[in-house]
Length: 342
Image (cartoon, rainbow, N blue to C red; front, side, top):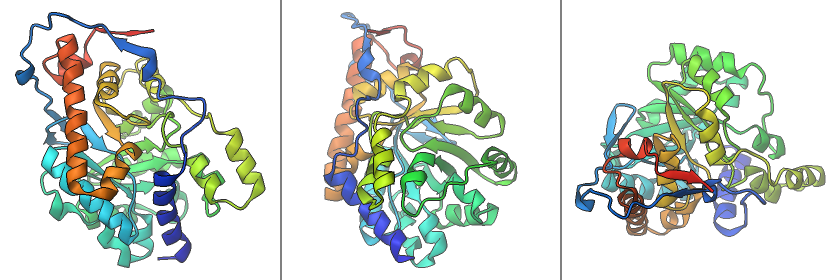
């Protein structure tokens, strides 16, 4: 692997663990919503069913580990722990960007965790902008095949690339290339943001060109311009990153905007979610799945047991919210009228 890519991957892990890389003055938006408590829920808590389906596979709860890392030995340890915990708890797993492994096959092993998670959906990941920098269908197939993934997600990270010292900033004409990939690629293709959100109008266009699922990945959690600011020695880029510290659409705002553009695709809500109650709010506002990223990274570094304990808590929080409004299934939660904007 090129030394700067290796350093960047490890830098990202360290900064996300140790530094304040949240956006400033912006939340995920779920603090603006409250469930209307139903004192007589008329359901049995032990019969609450959280089963869901994603890209053709059953998952025990509509939760996804958001794409985080890969490409270094430390990243492999994290991905292994995530895969083992996801398999145990029946979550879907998103892997970090696999560009590093395409450029240096020695790093493929850091994404090869299917043996630890034989039954769950696994999503391979590549930056959409790489389609403008020499990557095509062959590289996309390589990413999917090496990780034995069920789908490929293309991430959109324009502002991160702009601040990043090594960034690729030519995002021109990508929608057409995404459309072509969706037509030619043999498995499911999705698109995700990295923390600034996807609005309803763009989501509609992406679904229309063949994208099967969209992760809105809204603001309110990690700001990658803040992460890259901490890596930069360029005073201009540092200043620009500071100006962007409250940029983006909150996760809740993305979900509401998508309601104005009805689609047939799958919607994933990620971006600053920290609890199962927030996850329940996201589903009630229209999400099909909910993603957790940096909020579970400390446990992913620590151990599989720590992750399983955290996952169990998140699942119980989701079920508690469902019990509180009398929602016996994910379908009834998604269609619930028992949520209001404050």
